[in-house]
Image (cartoon, rainbow, N blue to C red; front, side):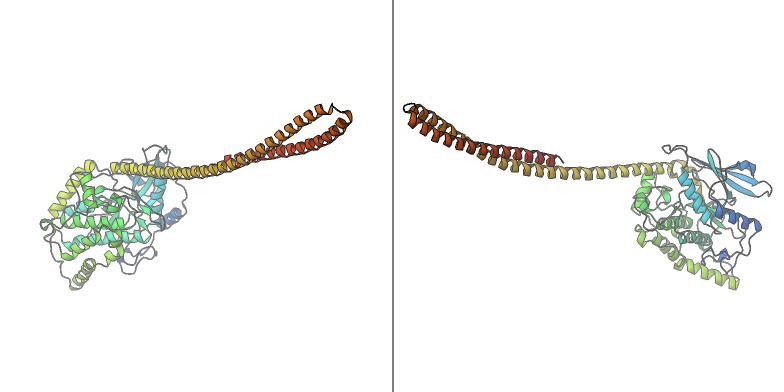
Length: 506
């Protein structure tokens, strides 16, 4: 059993072939088969219910549907056939295992489930599977989908004894129409591959293509860069491999790979290992081997070349692909054949090789072509990117811290120089004060000596002592005044010093 689910949500509209375009107004004019002639009452009710649905139905799905055989399974989902009670209509029930813990890798996150459901609610096109109903219980979200019973397109083509290029491209045209509708709504599928291209019913003259499995589809919004590594290695675009911004162009690369396989039965990039496959994709390493393309037209090869372009901006868009000469030439030939009644030209493709490819891809899918480990690598790459972003943030913080240190150092050096200058000024004042004190002491000694001499004569001593006393008092007042000045100066300098230190600390 392959690892990818082969069913996605579906709706069962009543379609008829015609030229008038869609009466619902939801389908592009480039899809002539999309004309709607009528809507059943049930579909009208269903359309209204889906349009207003804001939550999943918290009911037991088996109260409404009888479950049948298993149709397919994936890593976190199982698809079972079911029958609606009351109407007897058959659908496919896709049970998606919910992730219980955000840190766990078992199950699908609520965000991923809601993204898939929201995309499926938005799309209605004859070549795209549609959603019928949604249920939820403690462990699963259950999508009720249209039953696609025709199997894979490549299996159907491989069973045919012969196939022309024109017949093969009739199916390719349906694929292009479905993708054109998606891209018109800015929805990228991101997992286009043979396993996700099904037939609604293969037992009809002109089977209808159905694109399924929108598990990794994304709405591409302008201005929001989106990167991821997901999908199936054989079909992913180089920008996915190289973890570059993604857009609608990734689907066009996948269409190029699908077309290459459809026309040749060989895969352009598939290697012996996943790593070799991814290396081939990144290097765009492919060619048109004559052994495989001897019956393929040059226009068909040109169509493939314009899709398998490494630069997404230079890659052909879906609108350009529908206008490519190869696709338009097939349309013209079909119109001429219908008008003339002639049978189509039998330019045979080698269906035997296509059969070999489908058998090989089915048998080798689990070890070589699943995207389970590929998605794990995506998680690792995201973690590495987050770590690198953390390192860049840390380096930015380190640089800012270093700048702060340099600024503080400059402030400190500036303050230190200022303190040195102020201290030198205080030292000079103190030296002047000491000199004045020395003068005062000398005067005191002189006064004492003169006092001694005064003892020699009372009258003369008294007069002289009086003069000396007056002079001494004057000098004492002068010294006291100068001492007060020095003390005030010292206190002011100490206060300024403290204020400077506080500023530095801030």
